[in-house]
Image (cartoon, rainbow, N blue to C red; front, side, top):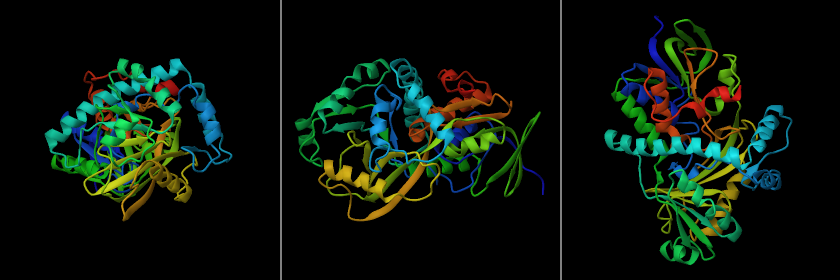
Length: 416
């Protein structure tokens, strides 16, 4: 059997890998996508599908280390770090804590905003141009608060967000509840981000797969990588389905990227941040747009027939257990805010691993060790939000086109 030869081989059929393949295909390159599992079946599957320029501010912010210390030992807190001996995690946390200052916060916010704003517009164009059937909606997103101090803190950031091109609207709590009867009384205030959007992530990745196949891109599911062999003209990839030769290799493998990059001698400081979601039938009273129950860091999004609660951050390695306490924290937050916190029928309880870098920005660009190896990973909680912009940036860099945004903030060399 002859070894297939590809112009570009993308490893990872999540949102970022599929978007990269589409942008490369649009640029005229011959592309193949492989994944160890099902298309869109990992981290891209169970998130809340929000498209959020509003999330330009990074998690590493002034005051976060103090809050994190209070949270980290509570299994129901937004952040949970079960005690365990893991030197790599503690190094990562030290680097993260060192960035919790105004200067580094602004640097990461600027890099995230550039990519998020580009992705927001590019995704809307893809939805229209390719008729992506993924419940895409441009309704904005609301942060909703029951704690005055938390509301005041976030309201004070609106000026900085405006400087990043992110519009906000401040809404009084009583006015908000009158307009949104799904919420219980007790809302102090809300911040609306009218430029945000949303979609159903499982349908989005399925639709990208449909478009790619229609364009002649081969997507191989359940094709696991076993080894790499870089050489002068490209890379040979050994898989459980045989070898694949490619001119350019793109690693778009989310939380699994450090393990694969290590085989190439490349250190990638990504930690797996475990998140959870609960998907049920849509209740009669549901929020009219995606919301974040900000005091509890829980997302709520209602689609045509389903509603999803999502959130929490757990650094427990790649622990495959479904933690009932973390799921319970989602439901408790929803009950605190909503008259009908979830529908009568529960369709899925899910967890997935978010690929977190300590500066909260993705890694996009060429490997410094191998001329034909590229990295597209580390998107944290924003893989769907950043997918189209990341895909286009990767395609521009690989094909030598002038990129739409400055690629410098996302280079892997910043960690070396």
